[in-house]
Length: 384
Ligand code: CAA
Image 1 (cartoon, helix red, strand yellow):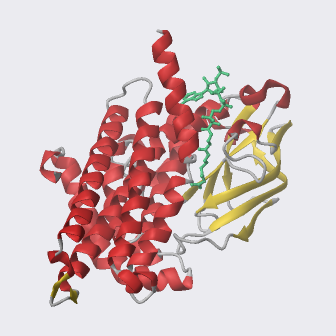
Image 2: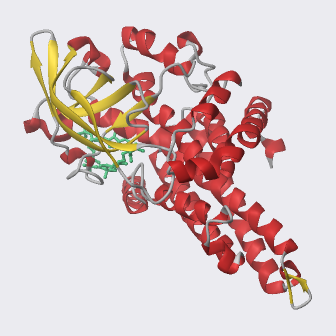
């Protein structure tokens, strides 16, 4: 029910839908095939003043909320899941600075992200450190007025196309998660190389890369917040705010797949009537719609709770991610089923929705990790 959203959010949603329909949908299949980045859509998002809307006004953004970011991601993903994440990763990459940057860091880096002049990515995961984010092994050693970063990052979405990277590394291994610090690293810094591109199942227009750091020297003023040891909490708070964005991507994908399924089943004739006229098909479509609407409302509620500054939002953000992404996987799989053999072929756009949906259950914390977050919150609440 778009009408129930605040007027400003409705306006963002309408504008994002226009970009999605005019610019994203026409190129989605082609970019999926070629793996090329959706630069034309990024340009359109800039022209429609939709990039970096979540960045505070004093740093060139709109001061928009997570809810506003979510509706933009949802609309883009309804047309193309890859384009949805190409946009959303900028929130994941810049929230660390919004949440924990010094005044100088915010002034230096956020305006270009707000305008879409620079894309920004998030470097937390490593080859041997995924769900257990605290076990990362990249290091950053203080040396005079700089830090020297060594190590590798994995699964960096927007890797290579981003100009800026928030990178997490251990400044003091002996302190565990309290010895992890965050750094802002500019592309082109000597010793920072973009590594291999992953050959992904879905979201194929978005590059996912390894990042390699070999004696990469960054100025000490790029230590996020100017304080060592605050990186892990910063990453967790960032993920709390970014996970509703993944959930919104999933809602958009599920919605887009449902619309294709409705169109196809009403046109496809079998046994002398439209496939849609069979109650078995109607019930499938109805179940898909119920699940999508329930997921959407949970995503909006989580986003609203974050925007309202409520404490302990991790649980709601995790719930929204699980609910919406599991829904997207079910709905897109059912949509393929409704297309029959045609659904399994690339002639129709529907199999792409299923491929794009799968990653939403995995990135920004697998749905198993979300359940860990939820269960820990439940235990804490029970102890109070
Ligand atoms: N907000 C603030 N602080 C938090 C926090 C939160 N949500 N969660 C934990 N912390 C703090 C704790 O308070 C604790 O601080 P103290 O030491 O001061 O007490 C510290 O962080 C350690 O907390 P835990 O003991 O709970 O940490 P843990 O090691 O058990 O890990 C976890 C918890 C939830 C499993 C975490 O590791 C996690 O979220 N893992 C998944 C990581 C993830 O989502 N990775 C995806 C990266 S992005 C990506 O996929 C790539 C891309 O480009 C899209």
